[in-house]
Image 1 (cartoon, rainbow, N blue to C red):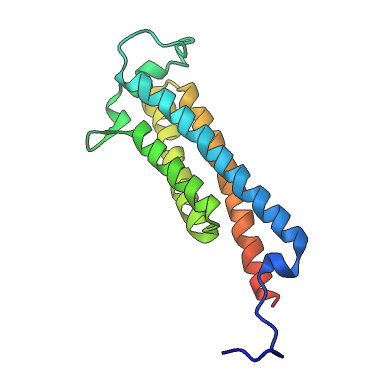
Image 2: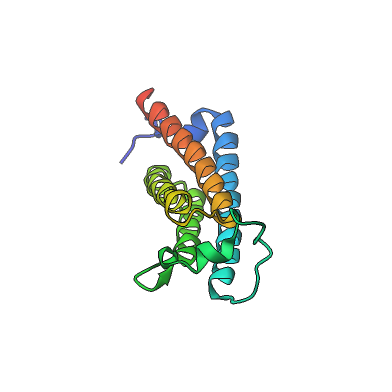
Length: 160
């Protein structure tokens, strides 16, 4: 038990009020990006289960239908877009609960998977999906912010 004379260990936010503003802002920016990722992945999932001509079928190089109906659009009979929804939901929750390091690790894995899918689009299918490219952009942003946030926490702890 602490004596009344002993100061309590202060959180990063309590020691530096500007850190709490940045911390709260970062939580909600990452959550917002995750919600955007869920929306984009949901649109891709809709294309996966649709047989109609898609609005994103722009030309021979941009066609979400070709990408989302290819053999690469599923892993163990689970649509890749559904995995994207689950991943973005997990990143949003991790961000809201300030699980910075876990968020950073998940985001790095998701980025690697997105790069793999982009490789398939470019070199195997030779067609891009607007939703997939948008998702790649979102995951790049989450990686930049998530890594910056995790490093900021690490530096603040090291400065104690």
